[in-house]
Every structure is written in C-alpha cells, then in structure tokens.
Length: 510
Image 1 (cartoon, one colour):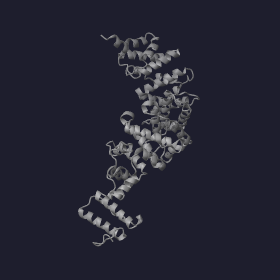
Image 2: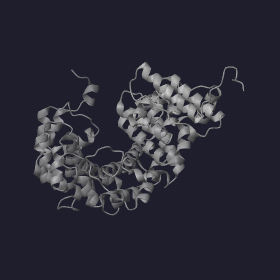
Image 3: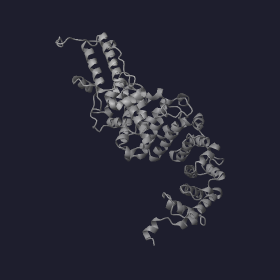
C-alpha cells in the first residue's frame, strides 16, 4: 500500500474521470498538474475520455475561462498517445485555429485564449506532422503572419504564433517553397520589426529573450537559399537585397542582441540560446556580404563575442553545446576571417595567445631547421590547439569546419597553414583542395630540408625569387631510378639559374 507521501506525489487517476462529470474539475486539473511532464500514471481509458470531453468543450463552451482551461489541458495531454484520435480531425483543427484568432472569429476571444490555442497547436503539430500539412492547406502561415503584423503585439502573445510559423516554413519535400512564399509576403521584414521593437526594453525579460529566439529561428527558415554556407542545393535561390533591402540595419539589430553581455551560458540560458539563434541566421548571409558583421555595430565587441562563444563550445562542448551549433559557429567565423583580413590579428591572439609565427620562422632559420612537421607548443591548452586536433577528427563534418576556420585565419595561404598547424595536420587539407603546389611533391622531410637549404643559398647569392627555377615534382609513385633522374634534372636547373654553384674541394671558404 502506498504511503501518504507517495499518494500526495502521484497523480490521482480519478481526477481525469471527473473532467467528464464535473466541469469545475478543469481548473483543479490544470492548476494541480500544469507542471507535470508525463501522464503515464493515468489509465489510457481515462485519457481517452478526458480528451473527448475537452474537444466537446472547444465546440460548446460559452465561458471563455472554460475554453482557456480546456486548451491548457489539451496542450498537456497532447504529449500522450491515447485519446488524440478524438482531436486529430479537420473540424477540431479549424476550431483551434479560430480560437487562435486566425479564423472568422478574430477578436472575439480574450488574448489568453488566443495564446493558449497557439501553444496547444504547437504541441499537437509536434505530436502529429500531418497537422502541419493541414495547416498549410488552410494557408495557416499567412493567417499567422497577419497576427504578427498587428501593432503593439507583445512577446508573450506572439510566442506560440512564432513557433507555429517556424514549423510551417521548415523545408520539407512537400513545402520547399513555403519559405519563399512567406518571404514574398514580407515575413522577413516582420521578424526584424519585432526584433527592433522588443529589444528596446532594458534589461530584457526572459519572455522577450525566448520570443526573440523564435524570431531568429524564423529568419533562418525564411532566408534559406540566400547564403553560401548552408550547402543544400535543394533550397530555392533567393536574392539577399530583394528581401532585405535594408540589410545593414537588419544585421545591426541582430548584432545589438548578439553583443549583450553574458558571463556564462548557465548564468542566462535564454540569452545563450538567443545568441546561438543569431549565429544560425548568419549561416544564410551571402558570401559577398559577410564582412558586414564587422562593419555595422561594435565590430570589436562582435569579434569578442564570437570568440567567447567559440571558447565555450570548444573548451566545454560536452556541457554547453550541440555538435551542430559548434560547427555552424566555426563556419561563420571561417567565412568572416576569409572576407575580413582586419579580423585576423585579433582572432590569432584569441586562438594562439602563446605563439608568434614570425618568431617561430626566425628561430627555424637560425637553427637551419626545415618547416615544422608538427605543432609547436602542441600540449598548450589553447582553443587554437584544440581546433588543430579537430583537423584529424574522425567526424568528417567537424574536421572540415575546424580546418576551414584555421585556413581562413591564415588568409587561405598554403605555406602559412603548414607553419601554423604543422605539415602532418595540413597535408590532407591541402591535398583535398589541390593546393600543395611545390609542397605537394615533397614526399620526405629530407626533400623539404633540401628546399629550405636551397632558398637560404639563394638569399646568400642575392638571387631574387623570380630567378629560382620551377622544379619538377613527383607526379605519382616512382621507381628509385625515376626519382634519381628527376632530382638530377632539378639540380641541373638550379645550376643553370645560378642559384646553386659548384666549388672545388678546398674552395669552400672562398
């Protein structure tokens, strides 16, 4: 027999039965179990009867309070499988749509009813994907957009509608053009208007942060096909300036939120999620416009925030980030570094605070060492070193994103990436891009050392780089005889150009 403590903490199955017998039990049910995450304790038969009763209330209840409580109860019960067949009907869907303020009864219901209806619909759509198809057939996205365009709409009221619009504009096999259609209706500009309006409140309440994140999610959906980082050729191409003629102002509004101070993700999870949503939106910025991130707003603050978040992801990824958000951030930073050379010095200091490439090169030259085969200070726990380790990560997507970031850091320079990461780490990346050039044919450290020695001799003889002849590299596997012939041919070219001079024994010091 359950103890009194267990009895108090366990939902009472009979309470659901009361819904079909006593309407006053609705308020008790919602009040007592609004925070419940599961209704597994209730018998399936009780849930079926409760849902059927609540659906009846949607059609017949004249009391707005009963409607609200019915919607809240349905929102919670939507997590369960039992009884939902009574709800998943076109007539019921149309009724909830009307209660949201999207039907002919717009303005007839209290705002609380509209909000609860929209949140109920969100839960139901995530429970049954077929509902989103029905909503599209009812042109639900257009109706929702009209509500979001109402003057003075609050973040609290808008949250459920924003989430529904996000669901309806997600690319699927059946709705690949839905985001384009909504963009044509001005939905992108609507999102930015809401962002500018809601971000004026200081400090931003939690509900503002949550609703602003939903705006960012919608902007991501609505701008698919504009950017160069998404990598999905299935998206319909969309022109950036056509849909965002005031894109500088729009990006500035996003960066104002992005640069809000945040001591740590756990200190304000809603703000952390908002910043992640902004990074997500940046993925869809076209390549030619990417430098805008350090042109508008406070560029120094934007760079600092980007690398603050990157450090959170890379240094404490198991606690704070998902793999997808980590890769998206790396791609955004990589693209920014490629397009904004002025951003690279700051980025280098953040990633490799204990390194100086020029000094490392001078030290190697002084010691007559070849280019580094591995990373100097490889055990230093810097964010840059962690990114270098990701270059050989077995997860190819993560490998690619980290490599792109580091390659962007050195301005996509083949020699510089070897100096930064070591020949072993850079070899695969350079080979994939066909960027080895002279380096691609140095199949041994001895050959690399010889080239370094030849360059030093050229400098001693005051030979300009233009005078150094082109050396023939190995074009594939070769026999010892073929390799010897190739090296002799290269040596003769060096002799003919004057880069290398033969001396007689005893004349070395002359």
